[in-house]
Image (tube, rainbow, N blue to C red; front, side, top):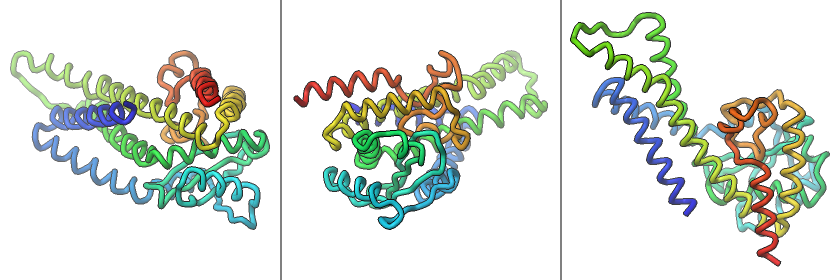
Length: 289
């Protein structure tokens, strides 16, 4: 059911992109949007992991650099029947982690120094199992495609906004053309990016629930993952991760901007409420007994 929902939301996001292209330039606009989207997805597919790891100054570690961490990842990889991903460490005190890569054969798991120091061994295992679940479920590729398409729509909205602001819009003398222009402007600048964001959030949130469930099964200890989420959420609420950016916040196990806003920010959060995730993990633990 989760896969069907994700597919439907991806189709809706693609349809929205084509609609924006049609509004912007008819059939030619739709064609241009498809080409731009394909180019962005091509770049994202091949280079997104390197780009995001570089953004956070992540350094790859070997068994000689981090014996316990590599051993932990290796053990969980065997349980999940996945190829061994590259392992990275990000030097920041704020506990968090993410996975990236275009497929299980070209994947990476990154953890912060803060999460290594803060969590107990079984809790860290739960977090890494969650990230391996994203790799196993190919969420890293899905999130890249979604972010690319949503990014195109937002970019067009920004262009339309500045075009209107600078007075470069088209001049029409026909009756009713003014109202039509206003409707188009509202669609391009307000409704389209809002819809894209909501669809993106719907996909991201559903994948987080699935990764929690799969991660709990891989680690064999859903309660440890629940405990880890609670600790990471606490730090996210009380300490800002300066390195984080909104465009990559959906990648982390807990939104690094959890404490950066009010109820409106939580409405547009890339992650479901941590309390809901913990409740589901507790239910999973009960079912496994």
